[in-house]
Length: 349
Image 1 (cartoon, rainbow, N blue to C red):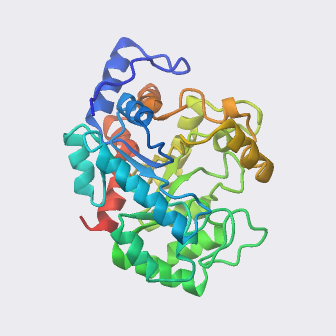
Image 2 (cartoon, one colour):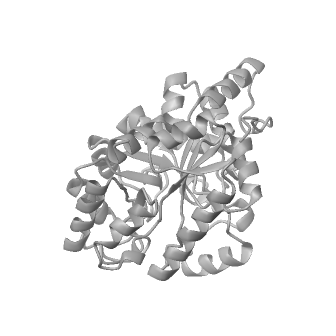
């Protein structure tokens, strides 16, 4: 995959010539990890990832509602797509694969389902999905399952006994525990139960933009205390300004959330999880909006922050961080090194 980057700076973050040179150089040199997006397995994705300089994507490889047969079909299809496009993408099951992707100008694809529905109450199935390449798994989606409660439940009973066994087995296997959609109590229980760092692959601080999917400050501190990382999303739903709740989010809003988190929990615990769903259509969006009105508040055209509409825009994050006067080392951590550290710790390779 070529390293040519998008050469259109976001209008919301005008740069001087010196800043633009620095941003493009820094982005090209960095490991860029989008820790949560839905990859469309088509040529257009490869073009977008190339333009954005994306090194690795944690791919929501299964539909959150998928049962066991459907999840197996989806993972099989993803593996076949990777095999058929091995000049541009590779399956990442170790951090060395991510480094190899950078060296060979390809994109590393991490399999990271956003629900555990497909394992039901069968612990041995974790081993099966690990063998198929899954290295990150979100414990719940919006609803309750055998493991715990999602953020959409009216009551959060916390991590179940089975859920504790799942977390322990994921630790043993080397599979990262993702708590992005979990309820607050389930999330806290999982952080405390895990012997390894856990992640919020795509989330945001509730203090800035209150939402059922947001994370309270005490939960964010608990995540950081255990070595975890939160990835900021690019969705208007999660970056909105409470004083102007109907205004589409933009790059300054994205940076505002990043800076808040850096001040709260430290630079070593913040990354990006852009939550680009490349498979979404207007019809699917409308259906989801009817089911989850709070999660799908914005119109389809404005659902993503201005300047962050797809993976080709990833370089605009670096541009915005340069304008915001973040240092080079801090930018590298946000772009990918923080999540890479967690992967290295949990995966062991």
